[in-house]
Length: 115
Image (cartoon, rainbow, N blue to C red; front, side, top):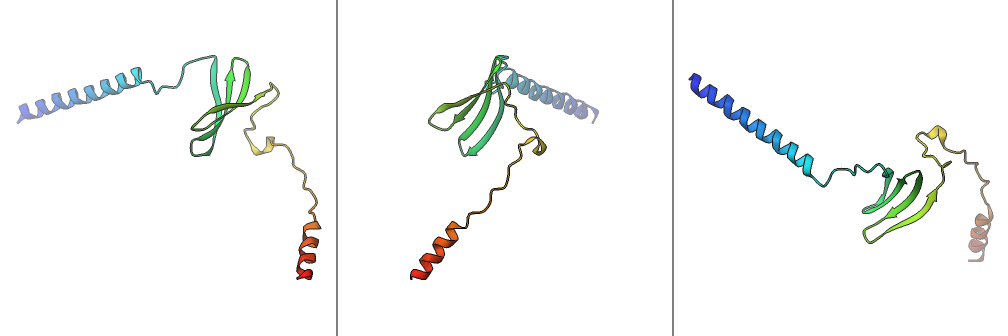
């Protein structure tokens, strides 16, 4: 009975070791790793639709807004150094409320009266 238990422990330990070795080799030589470049860096990404994204890319000390979809990638603009990414709602600029226009209501009333 003790021989079976010892064989079970040895073979289980060997299989767990092989699995850990396989995971290590996969992570070490996998091409899906994030680029380790210190010059190029994707700071932020937002998905607009399936396979359509906006990226903020840093190249050295410069930042760029880049759009990407299935067919192409295009530069939208160069972001200045004073442009920062807002990390909270409190940092967003205030938007003033514009008065509502009543002109469209008058147009609809005139159309309804003419019918």
